[in-house]
Image (tube, rainbow, N blue to C red; front, top):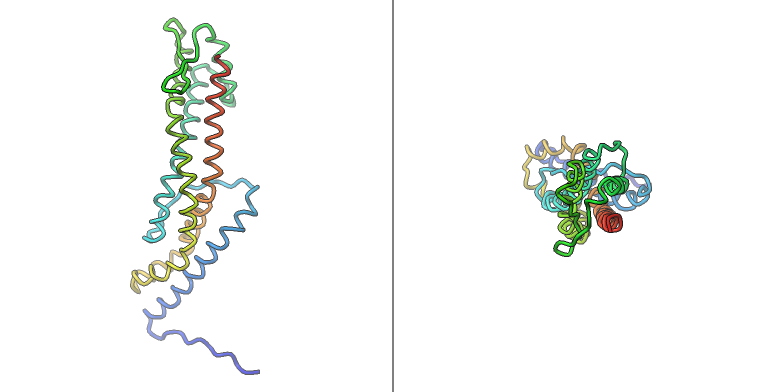
Length: 238
């Protein structure tokens, strides 16, 4: 049996780091990206924390992550508006912390039925309240209307994020081919610093990819929730 040739490593220190750094980072990123597909799909049923998208300091990667972060933030903003409205409604009516939005609307109707009605404004429903209504009823109506005012733009933003996310995920799949050119830009000193950050970098990239892959599903859920809230308001106060 013939002996296998042994790969010779560069003897120059800078060349050595460039060689090893390129191989380590390239292999690492390839593992991350390829592992981010089927592996994530298998764990889809298990709900994981959706981390905010962070920048890596690598230009090629961040050119993908920056627009992806904007899309992720649009979904987070839409959901945050729902939570704020629910909190304000719950506070106005002095309801328990675990009260759902639908339960809050029903309680608002029970307390303020004779003061509140649904009207259309710009093709969207909103609540109109009589000036004689108690302050808690007015505050509850304000909480609902603040959300309703943001629903059209929120749905548009969320849907656009879902549509654009696929292209960004595809762009991220090219990271393994791009890492070599990025390494070449750093020089030996920058490369050494980059290699020492590989564990943190890999964690950031993997989390970012998971968040990006979750955008379409989260966008669909958010759109559904916003539509459900609007319909529930109309049905509750018709």
